[in-house]
Amino acid sequence: MAVERVQTIAFSSILVDTIPPEFIRSEKEQPALTTCLGCIPQVPTIDFSDPDEGNLTRLIAEASSEWGMFQIVNHGIPSEVITNLQKAGKEFFELPQEEKELYAKPPDSKSIEGYGSKLQKEVEGKKAWVDHLFHNIWPPSAINYQYWPKNPPSYRAVNEEYCKWVQRVGHRLLSLLSLGLGLEKNELKENVGGDELKYLLKINYYPPCPRPDLALGVVAHTDMSSITILVPNEVQGLQVFRDDHWFDVKYIPDALVIHIGDQLEILSNGKYKSVLHRTTVTKEITRMSWPVFLEPPSELAIGPLPKLINEKNPPKYQKKKYCDYVYCKLNKIAQ
Image 1 (cartoon, rainbow, N blue to C red):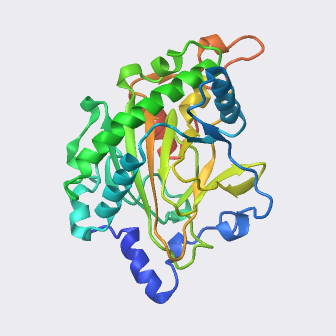
Image 2: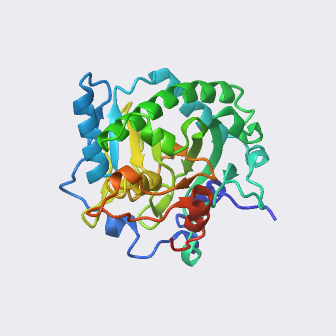
């Protein structure tokens, strides 16, 4: 039986100016009732080109401890590389539905790679207003080109080019985050997989929604990975939870949004915070985003780093293989 995608549902929903009940969130989740307006604290914005490494390390460590999220400007990725990435992703989602389905995630797949609409176990039968495409972009041994669209023809080239640049950002972020914990530059990277660290790209496609006050693009969650490097488009939608409120994350042109993920919170024994965030949708415009998740190898066991543990700071997390962590999280199993 064919799966009905959100993009298709959105088209029919706009004609009747309503949305199916399975997309209507509870009152404690509805963005119209839960978004804090007015005086809005700003997620830290950090100049990644700061020549003072000590200052840059301090700013990143503070943002990672207090927010679990920050934006970086002057990150070094050429604007045309990002523009081409966005253009290719947008063109894929504008293809006829039957062509997109050629890249659908198989129902029995243990991997999350592929085109789809559902990612994790849906609580109370509710659904998120989003379609997505996942595939690994690094290392070469992890790439399955079965899930890389052949149309548009530029898709592979622009993703490979972006991959070269985003790796530089990822490597430098991990080095600075490592220094921020009082470790050697390479220690965090080695403890999340070293050269086997996977770069997993996701394209999120949030079509226009007749009732953006009731729906969510992606429900509240923290990222399972070590860090996330996200390219947004210009449509507002990312929100962060802080001080018991949901706040909009201001869109900054040419900035990358950085999320601290669960594995860095675990490795740092709680010093760095995995950020709780969600995505809202809009009535007239499609929102898209391109997060890249830096994921440890599936069999790598991750726990608090011994150097960061002592009598005053005992381990707060259990050591666990990354594949087991992911399984529990996606299936809502306590861990």
